[in-house]
Image (cartoon, rainbow, N blue to C red; front, side):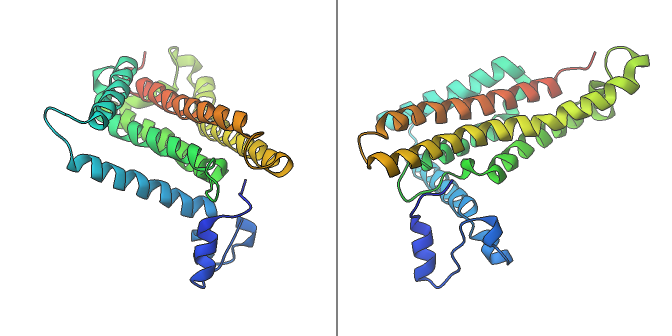
Length: 241
């Protein structure tokens, strides 16, 4: 879903760069790099990097500002929540989970700003995030259990292993579809409704309820994605039975 007017497209046209609105219009590597879901994903990443850099500069042992206190509560809350799900061994994987949480949340909210594009309203972005979560799940499993990690795919009864193994492979592959399509569908649908209301009912009053609902659903979808990622990590960390 695209806004009628994207500020990066205006900037690209001023710079003489090609302006593309979808993958079907891209015919070169440069044009693929300038697709809205790619460029606005970089905007989200730059926003997070710059914000983190500015916050780190002002870190105090005894914080006097409310900003540091707020982020300490948020980050420690996410970390403790993850440890409750994965156990203490999962703490070392918290940076990845926290990064995914903030990136997805920022991308979800970007689509509500006029002139911006929400990268998570494009299936390519959500599939990328899902692949990171699912592939790293198996990296954790192999790292902690070595070759014994294969037992997670064989089931508790050895003579049922030829049946259980392909089912487990299909189930783990379906995790990518589950994570990506759920996130994409909800954010795309929200932006589609907003665009229709903007077109039919003006810029201010009618879209407001959907925008407030979008703030809630954007947070919930980021939370669900991260919660499922934590549960996948917990399954890879525990011993197979």
